[in-house]
Image (cartoon, rainbow, N blue to C red; front, side, top):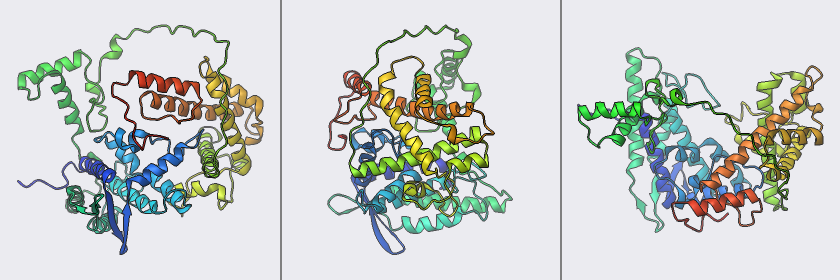
Length: 474
Protein backbone atom coordinates (compact mmCIF):
# COMPACT_ATOMS: atom_id res chain seq x y z
CA UNK A 1 0.00 0.00 0.00
CA UNK A 2 1.33 3.43 -0.91
CA UNK A 3 2.24 5.57 2.10
CA UNK A 4 0.34 8.81 2.60
CA UNK A 5 2.58 11.88 2.06
CA UNK A 6 1.05 13.60 5.13
CA UNK A 7 1.57 10.70 7.54
CA UNK A 8 3.24 12.07 10.70
CA UNK A 9 2.71 15.54 9.19
CA UNK A 10 3.46 17.54 12.33
CA UNK A 11 6.68 15.59 12.91
CA UNK A 12 7.74 16.03 9.29
CA UNK A 13 7.16 19.78 9.55
CA UNK A 14 9.45 19.85 12.59
CA UNK A 15 12.19 17.92 10.81
CA UNK A 16 11.92 20.00 7.63
CA UNK A 17 12.14 23.26 9.61
CA UNK A 18 15.31 22.01 11.29
CA UNK A 19 16.82 20.96 7.94
CA UNK A 20 16.07 24.36 6.42
CA UNK A 21 17.79 26.00 9.39
CA UNK A 22 20.84 23.72 9.14
CA UNK A 23 21.28 24.45 5.44
CA UNK A 24 20.78 28.19 5.89
CA UNK A 25 23.76 28.28 8.27
CA UNK A 26 26.21 27.37 5.49
CA UNK A 27 24.30 28.52 2.39
CA UNK A 28 22.17 31.42 1.20
CA UNK A 29 18.52 30.82 0.35
CA UNK A 30 17.13 32.51 -2.75
CA UNK A 31 13.38 32.76 -3.40
CA UNK A 32 10.86 34.89 -5.24
CA UNK A 33 7.65 36.58 -4.14
CA UNK A 34 5.51 38.55 -6.57
CA UNK A 35 8.20 38.15 -9.20
CA UNK A 36 10.90 39.78 -7.02
CA UNK A 37 14.01 37.70 -6.31
CA UNK A 38 15.21 37.83 -2.69
CA UNK A 39 18.03 36.28 -0.63
CA UNK A 40 18.04 35.13 2.99
CA UNK A 41 21.31 34.84 4.91
CA UNK A 42 22.20 33.46 8.33
CA UNK A 43 24.59 36.35 8.98
CA UNK A 44 21.57 38.65 9.25
CA UNK A 45 20.42 36.70 12.32
CA UNK A 46 23.91 37.02 13.82
CA UNK A 47 23.78 40.80 13.30
CA UNK A 48 20.38 40.93 15.03
CA UNK A 49 21.61 38.82 17.94
CA UNK A 50 24.70 40.97 18.44
CA UNK A 51 22.67 44.20 18.37
CA UNK A 52 20.33 42.71 20.98
CA UNK A 53 23.22 41.49 23.15
CA UNK A 54 24.60 45.01 23.52
CA UNK A 55 21.51 46.11 25.47
CA UNK A 56 22.69 45.87 29.11
CA UNK A 57 19.59 45.31 31.23
CA UNK A 58 17.00 43.65 28.97
CA UNK A 59 16.61 41.89 25.65
CA UNK A 60 14.35 42.32 22.64
CA UNK A 61 14.64 38.57 22.03
CA UNK A 62 15.07 36.99 25.48
CA UNK A 63 14.60 33.43 24.20
CA UNK A 64 17.54 33.50 21.81
CA UNK A 65 20.87 32.18 23.07
CA UNK A 66 24.19 31.22 21.53
CA UNK A 67 22.69 27.77 20.96
CA UNK A 68 20.16 29.37 18.58
CA UNK A 69 22.53 31.60 16.59
CA UNK A 70 26.25 30.78 16.90
CA UNK A 71 27.11 28.02 14.37
CA UNK A 72 29.71 26.41 16.66
CA UNK A 73 27.14 25.95 19.46
CA UNK A 74 24.06 24.94 17.49
CA UNK A 75 22.46 21.58 18.36
CA UNK A 76 21.67 20.42 14.85
CA UNK A 77 18.63 18.28 15.72
CA UNK A 78 16.90 20.52 18.29
CA UNK A 79 13.52 21.33 16.75
CA UNK A 80 12.69 23.88 19.44
CA UNK A 81 15.76 25.98 18.67
CA UNK A 82 14.95 26.03 14.97
CA UNK A 83 11.31 26.99 15.57
CA UNK A 84 12.28 29.80 17.95
CA UNK A 85 14.46 31.27 15.19
CA UNK A 86 11.76 30.88 12.52
CA UNK A 87 9.26 32.88 14.54
CA UNK A 88 7.10 35.97 14.13
CA UNK A 89 8.96 37.72 16.95
CA UNK A 90 12.40 37.29 15.37
CA UNK A 91 11.01 38.18 11.93
CA UNK A 92 9.27 41.34 13.15
CA UNK A 93 12.27 42.70 15.07
CA UNK A 94 14.72 41.83 12.29
CA UNK A 95 12.52 43.59 9.74
CA UNK A 96 12.25 46.62 12.04
CA UNK A 97 16.03 46.91 12.55
CA UNK A 98 16.62 46.44 8.82
CA UNK A 99 14.17 49.26 8.05
CA UNK A 100 16.17 51.54 10.39
CA UNK A 101 19.50 50.39 8.82
CA UNK A 102 20.68 49.26 12.27
CA UNK A 103 21.52 45.96 10.60
CA UNK A 104 21.96 45.16 6.91
CA UNK A 105 18.83 46.38 5.05
CA UNK A 106 18.93 43.11 3.12
CA UNK A 107 17.90 41.40 6.36
CA UNK A 108 14.31 42.26 5.39
CA UNK A 109 14.46 39.30 2.97
CA UNK A 110 15.63 37.00 5.77
CA UNK A 111 12.85 38.32 8.02
CA UNK A 112 10.33 37.51 5.30
CA UNK A 113 11.50 33.90 4.96
CA UNK A 114 11.48 33.48 8.77
CA UNK A 115 7.86 34.62 8.87
CA UNK A 116 7.04 32.40 5.88
CA UNK A 117 8.24 29.25 7.65
CA UNK A 118 6.66 30.35 10.93
CA UNK A 119 3.23 30.53 9.29
CA UNK A 120 3.78 27.33 7.32
CA UNK A 121 4.94 25.41 10.40
CA UNK A 122 1.96 26.69 12.43
CA UNK A 123 -0.46 25.60 9.71
CA UNK A 124 0.88 22.02 9.91
CA UNK A 125 1.13 22.03 13.71
CA UNK A 126 -2.26 23.40 14.76
CA UNK A 127 -3.60 22.16 18.09
CA UNK A 128 -6.35 24.66 18.95
CA UNK A 129 -9.83 25.20 17.58
CA UNK A 130 -9.65 28.94 18.26
CA UNK A 131 -6.90 31.53 17.84
CA UNK A 132 -4.50 31.59 20.82
CA UNK A 133 -1.83 34.29 21.35
CA UNK A 134 -2.57 35.78 17.94
CA UNK A 135 -1.32 32.69 16.06
CA UNK A 136 -4.09 32.49 13.45
CA UNK A 137 -2.55 29.55 11.57
CA UNK A 138 -2.04 27.36 14.66
CA UNK A 139 -5.69 26.34 14.55
CA UNK A 140 -7.73 23.47 13.21
CA UNK A 141 -8.05 22.99 9.46
CA UNK A 142 -11.64 23.38 8.21
CA UNK A 143 -13.32 23.63 4.82
CA UNK A 144 -13.09 27.41 4.52
CA UNK A 145 -10.16 28.09 6.88
CA UNK A 146 -7.26 30.35 5.91
CA UNK A 147 -4.87 27.38 5.78
CA UNK A 148 -5.86 26.47 2.21
CA UNK A 149 -4.89 29.84 0.73
CA UNK A 150 -1.63 29.80 2.71
CA UNK A 151 -0.77 26.35 1.35
CA UNK A 152 -1.47 27.44 -2.24
CA UNK A 153 0.71 30.53 -1.85
CA UNK A 154 3.42 28.53 -0.07
CA UNK A 155 3.70 26.05 -2.93
CA UNK A 156 4.38 28.92 -5.32
CA UNK A 157 7.16 30.31 -3.10
CA UNK A 158 8.67 26.88 -2.41
CA UNK A 159 8.91 26.17 -6.15
CA UNK A 160 11.25 29.17 -6.50
CA UNK A 161 13.51 28.33 -3.54
CA UNK A 162 17.13 27.37 -4.10
CA UNK A 163 20.09 27.07 -1.76
CA UNK A 164 23.27 28.69 -3.05
CA UNK A 165 26.69 27.86 -1.63
CA UNK A 166 29.50 30.35 -1.04
CA UNK A 167 30.76 29.80 -4.60
CA UNK A 168 27.42 30.94 -6.05
CA UNK A 169 26.39 27.46 -7.24
CA UNK A 170 22.88 26.14 -6.63
CA UNK A 171 22.71 23.10 -4.35
CA UNK A 172 19.92 20.54 -4.54
CA UNK A 173 18.24 20.13 -1.13
CA UNK A 174 15.48 17.48 -0.88
CA UNK A 175 13.87 19.25 2.10
CA UNK A 176 12.20 21.82 -0.16
CA UNK A 177 10.57 19.11 -2.29
CA UNK A 178 9.54 17.29 0.88
CA UNK A 179 7.80 20.46 2.11
CA UNK A 180 5.82 20.58 -1.12
CA UNK A 181 4.89 16.90 -0.84
CA UNK A 182 3.69 17.30 2.75
CA UNK A 183 1.56 20.35 1.89
CA UNK A 184 -0.09 18.53 -1.00
CA UNK A 185 -0.69 15.57 1.31
CA UNK A 186 -2.52 17.80 3.80
CA UNK A 187 -4.58 19.33 1.01
CA UNK A 188 -5.65 15.85 -0.10
CA UNK A 189 -6.31 14.67 3.44
CA UNK A 190 -8.42 17.68 4.40
CA UNK A 191 -10.60 17.23 1.28
CA UNK A 192 -11.01 13.50 1.95
CA UNK A 193 -12.00 14.09 5.58
CA UNK A 194 -14.52 16.74 4.58
CA UNK A 195 -16.14 14.31 2.15
CA UNK A 196 -16.40 11.79 5.01
CA UNK A 197 -18.17 14.38 7.16
CA UNK A 198 -15.23 15.33 9.40
CA UNK A 199 -15.37 19.11 9.69
CA UNK A 200 -12.17 19.82 11.63
CA UNK A 201 -8.60 18.47 11.62
CA UNK A 202 -5.87 19.19 14.17
CA UNK A 203 -2.58 18.57 12.30
CA UNK A 204 -0.56 18.29 15.50
CA UNK A 205 -2.14 14.94 16.38
CA UNK A 206 -0.49 13.34 13.35
CA UNK A 207 2.62 12.19 15.20
CA UNK A 208 4.08 9.18 17.01
CA UNK A 209 5.91 10.92 19.85
CA UNK A 210 4.37 8.61 22.46
CA UNK A 211 5.78 5.52 20.76
CA UNK A 212 9.18 7.14 20.22
CA UNK A 213 9.47 8.04 23.91
CA UNK A 214 8.39 4.57 25.02
CA UNK A 215 10.72 2.64 22.71
CA UNK A 216 13.57 5.05 23.42
CA UNK A 217 13.21 4.22 27.11
CA UNK A 218 12.98 0.50 26.42
CA UNK A 219 16.19 0.56 24.38
CA UNK A 220 17.99 2.55 27.07
CA UNK A 221 17.71 -0.34 29.57
CA UNK A 222 17.55 -3.30 27.23
CA UNK A 223 18.95 -3.69 23.76
CA UNK A 224 18.50 -1.95 20.44
CA UNK A 225 16.27 -4.73 19.07
CA UNK A 226 14.36 -6.24 22.05
CA UNK A 227 12.35 -9.45 21.89
CA UNK A 228 8.91 -9.72 23.52
CA UNK A 229 10.32 -11.04 26.80
CA UNK A 230 13.06 -8.41 26.91
CA UNK A 231 10.49 -5.74 26.14
CA UNK A 232 8.31 -6.84 29.08
CA UNK A 233 11.18 -6.98 31.56
CA UNK A 234 12.58 -3.64 30.35
CA UNK A 235 9.18 -2.01 30.75
CA UNK A 236 8.93 -3.26 34.34
CA UNK A 237 12.44 -2.02 35.03
CA UNK A 238 11.53 1.41 33.71
CA UNK A 239 8.58 1.67 36.06
CA UNK A 240 10.19 0.28 39.20
CA UNK A 241 13.62 1.87 38.85
CA UNK A 242 12.27 5.33 38.09
CA UNK A 243 13.94 5.56 34.69
CA UNK A 244 10.86 6.68 32.79
CA UNK A 245 10.57 10.48 32.65
CA UNK A 246 7.99 12.67 30.93
CA UNK A 247 10.47 13.12 28.10
CA UNK A 248 13.14 10.79 26.77
CA UNK A 249 16.61 12.37 27.07
CA UNK A 250 17.91 13.37 23.66
CA UNK A 251 14.68 12.47 21.90
CA UNK A 252 13.61 14.69 19.02
CA UNK A 253 9.94 14.89 20.00
CA UNK A 254 7.58 16.72 22.34
CA UNK A 255 7.12 16.12 26.05
CA UNK A 256 5.01 13.05 26.80
CA UNK A 257 2.65 13.41 29.75
CA UNK A 258 0.81 10.09 29.82
CA UNK A 259 -0.03 9.44 33.46
CA UNK A 260 0.59 5.70 33.51
CA UNK A 261 4.23 6.21 32.55
CA UNK A 262 5.05 8.83 35.16
CA UNK A 263 7.66 7.98 37.75
CA UNK A 264 7.08 6.82 41.30
CA UNK A 265 9.52 9.35 42.69
CA UNK A 266 6.91 11.16 44.76
CA UNK A 267 5.84 7.92 46.50
CA UNK A 268 9.24 7.57 48.15
CA UNK A 269 10.17 11.20 48.72
CA UNK A 270 10.58 12.34 52.30
CA UNK A 271 9.75 15.86 53.35
CA UNK A 272 12.88 17.55 54.61
CA UNK A 273 13.21 20.82 56.43
CA UNK A 274 14.99 23.50 54.47
CA UNK A 275 18.01 24.75 56.44
CA UNK A 276 18.01 28.42 57.31
CA UNK A 277 20.15 30.59 55.10
CA UNK A 278 23.01 32.34 56.90
CA UNK A 279 22.66 36.09 57.22
CA UNK A 280 25.18 37.99 55.16
CA UNK A 281 26.19 41.45 56.28
CA UNK A 282 28.27 42.50 53.28
CA UNK A 283 27.09 43.67 49.89
CA UNK A 284 28.79 43.31 46.54
CA UNK A 285 29.48 46.52 44.62
CA UNK A 286 26.51 47.91 42.72
CA UNK A 287 26.47 47.50 38.97
CA UNK A 288 27.31 50.67 37.05
CA UNK A 289 25.76 50.74 33.58
CA UNK A 290 28.28 52.33 31.17
CA UNK A 291 27.24 54.88 28.57
CA UNK A 292 25.74 53.27 25.51
CA UNK A 293 26.04 54.03 21.82
CA UNK A 294 23.17 56.04 20.39
CA UNK A 295 21.82 53.00 18.54
CA UNK A 296 21.98 50.77 21.63
CA UNK A 297 20.35 53.45 23.79
CA UNK A 298 17.59 53.81 21.19
CA UNK A 299 16.90 50.06 21.20
CA UNK A 300 17.09 50.00 24.99
CA UNK A 301 14.42 52.72 25.29
CA UNK A 302 12.16 50.89 22.83
CA UNK A 303 12.61 47.63 24.73
CA UNK A 304 11.76 49.33 28.04
CA UNK A 305 8.57 50.63 26.43
CA UNK A 306 7.71 47.13 25.22
CA UNK A 307 8.34 45.71 28.71
CA UNK A 308 6.09 48.42 30.16
CA UNK A 309 3.30 47.28 27.85
CA UNK A 310 3.87 43.68 28.88
CA UNK A 311 3.66 44.64 32.57
CA UNK A 312 0.37 46.48 31.91
CA UNK A 313 -1.05 43.36 30.29
CA UNK A 314 0.12 41.26 33.23
CA UNK A 315 -1.23 43.46 36.02
CA UNK A 316 -4.47 44.08 34.14
CA UNK A 317 -5.13 40.35 33.92
CA UNK A 318 -4.26 39.58 37.54
CA UNK A 319 -5.03 42.83 39.41
CA UNK A 320 -6.86 45.59 37.56
CA UNK A 321 -9.43 43.34 35.86
CA UNK A 322 -10.05 45.84 33.01
CA UNK A 323 -10.68 48.77 35.37
CA UNK A 324 -11.21 51.62 32.87
CA UNK A 325 -10.05 54.32 35.29
CA UNK A 326 -6.75 52.57 36.03
CA UNK A 327 -6.09 51.73 32.38
CA UNK A 328 -6.57 55.39 31.42
CA UNK A 329 -3.84 56.30 33.91
CA UNK A 330 -1.25 53.87 32.56
CA UNK A 331 -2.22 53.37 28.89
CA UNK A 332 -1.90 55.74 25.94
CA UNK A 333 -4.49 56.37 23.25
CA UNK A 334 -1.89 57.85 20.88
CA UNK A 335 -0.03 54.88 19.39
CA UNK A 336 1.73 56.79 16.60
CA UNK A 337 4.65 58.00 18.72
CA UNK A 338 8.19 56.89 17.87
CA UNK A 339 8.41 55.31 21.32
CA UNK A 340 5.94 52.65 20.18
CA UNK A 341 7.74 51.59 16.99
CA UNK A 342 8.87 48.28 18.46
CA UNK A 343 5.37 47.57 19.80
CA UNK A 344 3.88 48.30 16.38
CA UNK A 345 6.42 46.02 14.71
CA UNK A 346 5.57 43.18 17.11
CA UNK A 347 1.82 43.22 16.44
CA UNK A 348 0.58 40.00 14.85
CA UNK A 349 -2.17 41.88 13.03
CA UNK A 350 -1.51 45.64 12.76
CA UNK A 351 -5.14 46.24 11.84
CA UNK A 352 -6.23 44.66 15.13
CA UNK A 353 -3.76 45.75 17.87
CA UNK A 354 -3.54 43.32 20.77
CA UNK A 355 -0.58 44.75 22.71
CA UNK A 356 -0.75 47.41 25.42
CA UNK A 357 0.75 50.85 24.73
CA UNK A 358 1.98 52.46 27.98
CA UNK A 359 1.43 56.11 28.77
CA UNK A 360 4.68 58.16 28.70
CA UNK A 361 4.57 58.68 32.48
CA UNK A 362 4.15 54.95 33.16
CA UNK A 363 6.84 54.03 30.62
CA UNK A 364 9.30 56.46 32.20
CA UNK A 365 8.53 55.13 35.69
CA UNK A 366 9.06 51.51 34.63
CA UNK A 367 12.29 52.44 32.83
CA UNK A 368 13.65 54.06 36.02
CA UNK A 369 12.63 50.99 38.05
CA UNK A 370 14.40 48.70 35.55
CA UNK A 371 17.59 50.77 35.85
CA UNK A 372 17.32 50.71 39.65
CA UNK A 373 16.84 46.93 39.76
CA UNK A 374 19.72 46.39 37.32
CA UNK A 375 22.05 48.43 39.51
CA UNK A 376 20.94 46.93 42.85
CA UNK A 377 20.44 43.28 41.95
CA UNK A 378 24.13 42.27 41.52
CA UNK A 379 24.96 43.72 44.95
CA UNK A 380 22.22 41.86 46.89
CA UNK A 381 21.74 38.70 44.81
CA UNK A 382 23.60 36.60 47.42
CA UNK A 383 21.23 37.65 50.23
CA UNK A 384 18.19 35.66 51.36
CA UNK A 385 14.79 37.21 50.56
CA UNK A 386 16.10 39.11 47.53
CA UNK A 387 12.58 39.68 46.33
CA UNK A 388 11.52 41.50 49.51
CA UNK A 389 14.66 43.66 49.44
CA UNK A 390 14.03 44.80 45.87
CA UNK A 391 10.31 45.44 46.45
CA UNK A 392 11.10 47.58 49.50
CA UNK A 393 13.63 49.57 47.47
CA UNK A 394 11.05 50.22 44.76
CA UNK A 395 8.32 51.26 47.19
CA UNK A 396 10.67 53.61 49.04
CA UNK A 397 12.22 55.21 45.94
CA UNK A 398 9.22 55.47 43.60
CA UNK A 399 5.64 56.72 43.92
CA UNK A 400 3.34 53.98 42.64
CA UNK A 401 0.12 55.58 43.88
CA UNK A 402 -0.36 57.25 40.49
CA UNK A 403 -0.81 53.83 38.87
CA UNK A 404 -4.27 53.04 40.22
CA UNK A 405 -7.58 54.69 41.01
CA UNK A 406 -9.04 55.23 44.52
CA UNK A 407 -11.15 52.07 44.15
CA UNK A 408 -8.04 49.97 44.67
CA UNK A 409 -6.29 50.01 48.04
CA UNK A 410 -2.57 50.61 48.59
CA UNK A 411 -1.84 46.88 48.56
CA UNK A 412 -1.98 47.00 44.78
CA UNK A 413 1.21 49.08 44.80
CA UNK A 414 3.04 46.18 46.44
CA UNK A 415 1.58 43.76 43.88
CA UNK A 416 2.66 45.96 40.96
CA UNK A 417 6.21 46.18 42.36
CA UNK A 418 6.16 42.43 42.94
CA UNK A 419 5.17 41.82 39.30
CA UNK A 420 8.11 43.91 38.04
CA UNK A 421 10.58 42.28 40.45
CA UNK A 422 9.41 38.77 39.53
CA UNK A 423 9.97 39.54 35.86
CA UNK A 424 13.55 40.72 36.32
CA UNK A 425 14.50 38.10 38.89
CA UNK A 426 13.45 35.49 36.37
CA UNK A 427 15.44 37.26 33.64
CA UNK A 428 18.48 37.50 35.92
CA UNK A 429 18.38 33.81 36.91
CA UNK A 430 17.87 32.77 33.28
CA UNK A 431 20.90 34.78 32.15
CA UNK A 432 23.12 33.32 34.91
CA UNK A 433 21.97 29.77 34.13
CA UNK A 434 22.70 30.31 30.45
CA UNK A 435 26.22 31.45 31.27
CA UNK A 436 26.69 28.42 33.54
CA UNK A 437 25.59 26.09 30.74
CA UNK A 438 27.59 27.86 28.03
CA UNK A 439 24.54 29.14 26.15
CA UNK A 440 25.45 32.77 26.70
CA UNK A 441 28.88 34.35 26.24
CA UNK A 442 29.66 37.22 28.62
CA UNK A 443 30.72 40.57 27.23
CA UNK A 444 34.42 41.35 27.03
CA UNK A 445 33.99 44.28 29.45
CA UNK A 446 31.64 42.48 31.87
CA UNK A 447 32.03 43.67 35.50
CA UNK A 448 29.16 41.82 37.18
CA UNK A 449 30.95 39.57 39.73
CA UNK A 450 28.26 36.88 39.63
CA UNK A 451 28.35 36.60 35.83
CA UNK A 452 32.15 36.49 35.93
CA UNK A 453 32.04 33.67 38.50
CA UNK A 454 29.44 31.81 36.43
CA UNK A 455 31.61 32.07 33.32
CA UNK A 456 34.69 30.90 35.24
CA UNK A 457 32.75 27.90 36.56
CA UNK A 458 31.62 26.99 33.04
CA UNK A 459 35.12 27.22 31.58
CA UNK A 460 36.48 25.07 34.42
CA UNK A 461 33.79 22.36 34.42
CA UNK A 462 32.74 22.25 30.78
CA UNK A 463 33.25 18.78 29.35
CA UNK A 464 33.67 20.19 25.87
CA UNK A 465 36.57 22.41 25.00
CA UNK A 466 35.38 25.96 24.51
CA UNK A 467 35.65 26.89 20.84
CA UNK A 468 36.47 30.53 20.21
CA UNK A 469 35.14 31.44 16.77
CA UNK A 470 34.53 34.72 15.02
CA UNK A 471 30.81 34.62 15.91
CA UNK A 472 30.83 33.98 19.66
CA UNK A 473 32.57 37.17 20.72
CA UNK A 474 29.99 39.72 21.92
